[in-house]
Image (cartoon, rainbow, N blue to C red; front, side, top):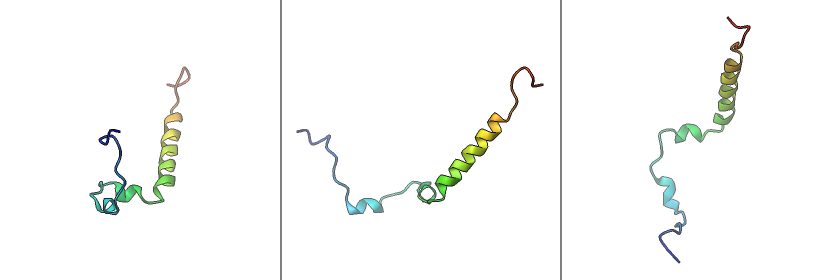
Length: 56
């Protein structure tokens, strides 16, 4: 068995490692619904632009 490809089990000290700048923001539970709302508003804006033979 090749030991270089097996993953080591996570240690308790792994939580203490360096975090990314956005990890505090993305770990919040409010981010999901807010992201969906922003996506829906963007889609609403995109699809409300008239396109085709009747647009000027």
